[in-house]
Image 1 (cartoon, rainbow, N blue to C red):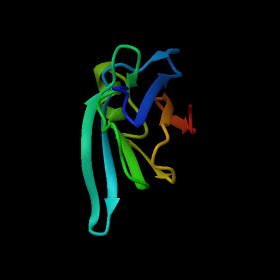
Image 2 (cartoon, helix red, strand yellow):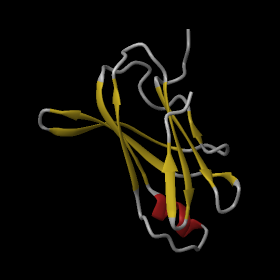
Image 3 (spheres, helix red, strand yellow):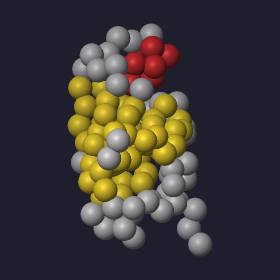
Length: 114
């Protein structure tokens, strides 16, 4: 039985070339009334969140909200984006979704990982 969440994430700090440890991340699900938080967690020393979100989720629209300002403040660095929100659609109920974030002080990129 797997303990890995159906939705996982990983953050790489491109400015330092290292995983972004200690970043607060919230997972939300879109409902008819707006957004509902499902879970929140902090990236581990490898910049990953693998088992803190729900093991199983329904199809629909979700978003991850990354506290990038808090992360860069810990390093005494300024940043342009105080938070990064990545919204994405889950169209298959029994599929793993990995949502990486490539980050630096002045920008970010994302893609659907595996």
